Image (tube, rainbow, N blue to C red):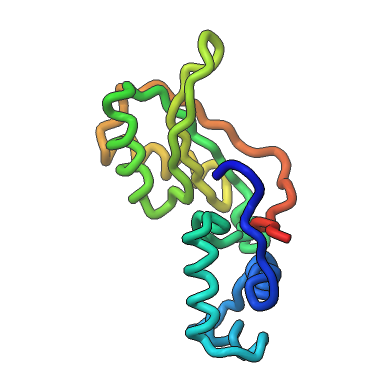
Length: 163
C-alpha cells in the first residue's frame, strides 16, 4: 500500500486500538470485543473486514511467549534450497509439528547462501537437534546444506501497533 493510510474514526479507531492490545483468549473473541466496546459482534466483524479491505490489516496472528512455557532452546534453521524447490520444501517444513515458522528470504552471496528459514522451539538444545534430525530423515533432506542458529537473547515480543 502506498501513500497515507486511510483515515479511521469512531468505532474503527476503537477496534484498531483494541486489536493492537490483542484479542481475548476466549471461544468467541469478537463477541467479547463487541461487549467491551458496547456494539454487536456483527459490527466488530464488519469493521475488521472494512479495515482489511482498506489494507490496514494483512493478517491476524498470535504472539506466543514460548520462554514462559519452558521452551528455552530456540533454533533458526537456515537452508540452501534450489529456487525451484524452495516453496515445496518450505511447505513441507511448515507442516512439521515442531516448526513454528517457515519462510523464504533472499540469499546474500557470497557470505549467506541460505534462502529458506524455519524456527524450531524446544526445552533443550538436544531436543531441538533431535527434532531436526527426525525432520531431515523423514523428509529425505540430507542433501540440503543447512545451519542451526540457536538464539542467545529474547527480544521484546508484541503484535502490530496501528494507532
